[in-house]
Structures are given as structure tokens and as C-alpha cells.
Amino acid sequence: MFEWKRMLADWKVILVLIFILLATVAIYPNPFRDGVVIKSVEKNSSAMLAGVENPRPTASPMSKEFIVSMNNVPVKNIDDYYSFTAKIKPNATVRVQTSKGAYVLHTKEVNSQNLGFRVDNVPVTNLKKGLDLQGGTRVLLKPAEQVSDDTMGLLLDSLKERLNVYGLSDIIVTEVRDRPSFLGEGNRFILVEIAGATEEEVVELIGKQGKFEAKIANSSVFKGGNDITYVCRTAECSGIDPERACGTSAGGWVCGFRFAISLSPEAAERQADATMNIEVVTEPGRKEGYLVEPLRLFLDDQEVDSLNVAEELKGRAVTDISITGSGAGISEQAALLNALENMKRLQTVLITGSLPVKLEITRIDNISPVLGGYFIANALFMAVSAIAAVVLVLLVVYRKFRIAISIMLTALSEIFIVLGIAALIGWNLDLSAIAGLIISVGTGVNDQIVIVDEALSGRASAERSHNWKERIKRAFFVIFSAYATITAAMVPLLFAGAGLLKGFALTTILGFTVGVLITRPAFAAVVEILIGDE
Image (cartoon, one colour):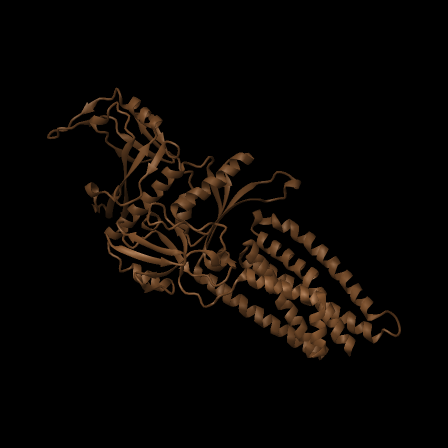
């Protein structure tokens, strides 16, 4: 009992306990939460029209808004959510109770189950799981030409806007290079990580420049972005085109869609000028005619649709027009879903405009959420197994249970403090980060064994040569030298592989720093008390 009092009175041990307390506050564990977290809200959806806001990208997981009940039916997990939404009918009213308030949603979409939410099981800690652990898609992009810092910044902003407008959540868009800047310019890449997105969605959104242009008789009338002041995404003015509903085609089904857009006054004037001198034709049996030259729609220089221009629009600066398109599939339902996806993608491009530079996809990693669960389970199993093996070996070598337990508790404290720092700074934990954590903790155990060996050797030979406390100081000289060497070795890995090893390098450095400055001095103080009393 006296030993424990002396340990708890040591300032180094007190410092570790303070950091553990702060880490607990940062991680904020609560395994008993129920509900589904709102990962994102689609623009102009039922949820957004009801006042539900998108979570801030920098918000901690535990602070994000989550759904508690729908129409007074408790929603405890994601299965409850999808079970409820599967029963929602068109033109229904849904009362959604969240952690921040109550909302009344009116379903008017073609797909009534799409309330505009992207959800997941409610988080139970503030630890952010990376792509390897929660599933999703990682894409490494390279600009097709050399870009300036200003153009790269514009590329990053445009990609974030495009992905957010499309409704994807948990997005990380960062610039990475294949070498440090002080070694030369190197190649510049853009790393995009999107949790919960499929490879097809990502490729369609960021694998193409997304240059939209409308032409009449080879004259450019308007382009996506600044020329478009409004894009309708509600059921009143977008959805499956009733005049071109689903029908059979060669080898499958085809469904048409339409949605309204508003042009800027400048774009409307260009349209008026382009149609001023175009001839009008009238089909037999029809009172109203249309222009000989249609309005042709191009996406990435490929014509995607052609619209007839009504006679009444000739030479008129009209700002409100309708855009149409289609989708195909082997069944009516597949064609319907494809049409809605195509419509949503085209709406996104019209809202955000084209990217300033074409991007080439260098690498794509698509990770299943199921694999992420296996990764977490295996990591926990290996961690427990490693700690048990270390404790067993220490018991065999030293035959001192207190020393073995002290080493194990120090290692666990180091892990917990590093996780607390990761939660505080919002660092995503992926497989590379976990590997870095294991490396730092393993080296920490090695350093603790060095401290114990020096202390025991020093105690045995204290009468003949050096005091055992001096030998502990010498052990720390070795530990700090190793820390400096490993940190220097990790710095290049921050840039190696176009930054894909950044998680490993950063977590390793962070783990070593916590160990050398916080936990290992405390362990030395504990060893001093335990061995000194013997």
C-alpha cells in the first residue's frame, strides 16, 4: 500500500494520469447510445427543405446530429431506419426526432424512401475511423498538366463542392506529393477518400472533367457553373419525364428524366442571339413549330441529348428552360434508377461547373465495410495476444509480477493517450495508423525492458561501480537517441507513396513522442520505487 501511495505522489505518474483523463474526455466513450447518425443531407431533398442541416466536416463524431425516432417509432440502429423508410409512401408526412430537435418531412420524390439522409450507426466514441475500417473508396488523381498553386487550390475546392452537392459524406480531399518540397518540385497529386461511396459513383464524379455546354448551331449558349443560377432538384420540377416515361428498347428498357434550370441574364441573351435568324419548321398536324437547329447538350465534349426549341422562344431571352435525358437498364426498375442517377449527376455538374483541369485516375482502392469490421476485430485480437505474450515472457525472465504488470499498464496507457490525441485533432485511424501505433508501443515495451535491465543491473553492482539510478539515466540517453533516429526515419515516409503512408509515419512519431516524454519517465519512476524498496 505504501508503494502505491509513493507512486501516486510522483509528479511523473500524476502527469500520466492527467493525460489519461484528458484522453478520456477527448474520446468521450459512450457504448450505450442508440440511433443513426446523419452523415449528410442532399440539397433540395425533403430533409433539407424541412430544415435539417449538413454536419460540419470538422465536427467530432459524438457531436453530430443523430435520428432518435421517426413518427414516434424508436430508431435504435441502421436496420431500424431502413425498415421504417422501406414502408414510406409518396406524398407522406414523416416526423423525425433527432438529438437537436424535431422536423416534419414531406415526401414528394419519385423514390419516396429517399428522404435526403445518408446515415450510419451512431458513433460511440469520438475516434474517426479511416477508409480501411469503415469501407469506401480511395482515389489518387493526377492533373493532366502542370498546375499552379492557385489552380490546385481551385481544383481542391471544386472537388469538395462537387462531392458535397452529390450527397457524399465523410470526404477527405487533400494535395499530396511524391517527394518533400525541399528536394524539388516533384509530382502533385490529389488524394480523395470517401466513406460509403462506390467506385462507380466516384469515377463518374471526379474521373471526368464535367464540362457541360449547350450549343445551338455550333454557338455556345450556356455552360455549367456561372451560367446556371438555379437547378431544380425537387419533385415539382424534376424527376421522371411524364412525356417520355419508361418504355422498352432494343435489349432492355429506357426511362426519360427532366428538370428545370434557370439561366443567367447573360446566358439568356446569348440564347436569344443564337436563335434570332434560325428558320422555323412545322410538322403536319401541329399548330406550333420549332426551330430547325436543336439545342444540343454536351458533357465532356460528348453529345448527351438534343432538345427542340419551340417557335415562341426564337430571339427571346428566356431564363427558365427544361433539361431532359434518359437512363437504360435490363428492367424497368433498373432503367428508372439509372435515369435518376444520371439526372442527379448532371444536376451536380450544372451546379458546380467543370473542373479547371482534367484529372487522370492513377489509383483506385475500393474497400468493403465488411472487411473493415474484420480488420478491427483482427487488430484487437492481435493487440490482446501481443500484450499477453509480452506479460508471459516478462514473468518468465524477471519472475517479478509487479514489473510485468507495470510494463503492460504503461503500454496500455500509451495507446490510450495516443488515441485521445487522435480524437482531439480529428485524425482518421486506418490500418497504416494502427500499424504505426503497434510499432511505437512495441518499441516502448523494448525501452521499458532496457530501463528494467539497467535498474536491476545497477542495483546489483551499486557497491562496486555506478549507482543504479545513474544507469537509468544512461538508459534514457539510449532511448532519446533511438527516438531521434526513428523520427528522422519517419519524416520521409510522410511523403513516400504520394502521402499514402502518412498515417503510419504520423502515428509512429506521435506514439514515440508520447512514450518518450510522458509514459516512459513515469515507468522509470515506478521501477525506481519498486526496485529501490527491494
